[in-house]
Image 1: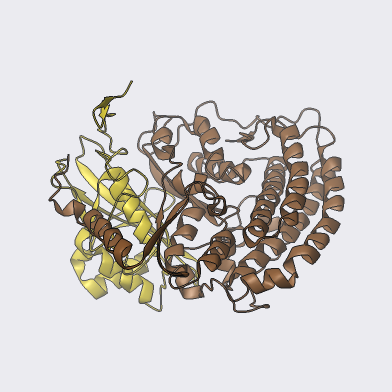
Image 2: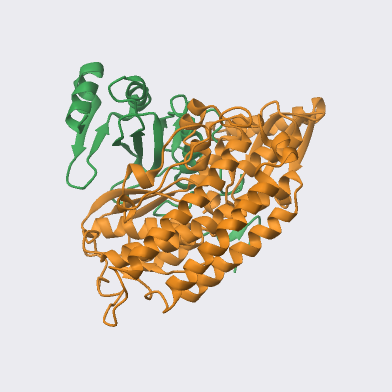
Length: 165
Length: 401
């Protein structure tokens, strides 16, 4: 199944607004998906007998930089029975206010593999996943301040009142 | 700083409450991070009811070395030594995956000379054997068999010696470079490698007699830690863990990268010979069988390297090395079969003037394989949990990156 067929399959099922754009310049074309409905899209792609995207290869949070002011998540799905690969991208504008993190729906109910990947994205980039069962920090300690992989991250000067040299 | 009352702290508070409650009702047992059977610095918080594990809460991150942050500030070539330190038991496979991804982004992957591709596959498969030998040996120790561990390390030492001869380093090689290799193989390497294969085959037979078909070992591993196939796929398990559950899925065959399409080898899967499909013994057996397949691949590589792809005096393994590694702006996800499963790197490159990537995400196979432990650890005995951990064969360097 080509990317066009997948696109028409999605628009047929969810309506015109679901695919907000596409990227075809690189070797791996990607579909840009409406961020609020990504969990439904993944569920459909996993269960549809024509696609069976049953394997979540990778889930990456991305900070598109201070000027762009956007955060996104990239999903690499693969279908073991049909040997297909698919890239889905969602993104949202955010002003980097730590009280209001960029927030996307969690896909843990579709792929359990997303559990730790989403926790890592939260830990490293401060992306909040709504509906995640246990969204704690994964790699950094629980009391860590800030999100290290953000482009504007500055190293802390103090750790619990102790100066870091 | 996030205030304590915000919704971003709910999960942490819930977790603290769960542990506090469990400490009253049941017992909370900390296994690790310095426990020998957790294979590195993994901490498992077990909520136990007597000998029964009710819940496993893994805590990782003790070996986090900011791989992705480093990769965002270094050129592609400079990051290769960092990839070596991800899965430090199979450094060649890591750098092979990384290098393939960069070469495809640069569009030079078709220009790599055949001899280089075969040398890459040869050293990767040697490294795969070394990694599986550690998995088998330490698994024996987990179960209580000490001798196989010493045997495995004795044989692994030959591989370490050979790879040191080629690259100058015992474990962290930095041998596979973008567009080529650090050096050609040293003179006499192929012959030495053949000697090793001839020496090693009977040793595997011995090892199988000692451990694989050992009744005590089978009793401890068969029907323990059964991982059904659908759960394995849903958790993103790959490599021997997925194949142990009975699916013939090997990216060397699926993606046909490097020299693998020209090589003959089988993909062993778990069959449930001693118990249920997907139990600890199956996962262990897949690794043992993969060693045999790797030996087959090594034999074929050596045949070609000694005949039509012979070393010539003017062969330069760095001939195709690009002066500047500046790919076009693009995203690319490369996946390759590491020793533990699907090893992936996701690159975002945003400018054709820059030599450093905008974002790199690494998908360690151990990371996903370990996450299934929460599922496997429910309602088992503590001793069986140890057997399950060992059979998953993860390396914390790759989990934490």
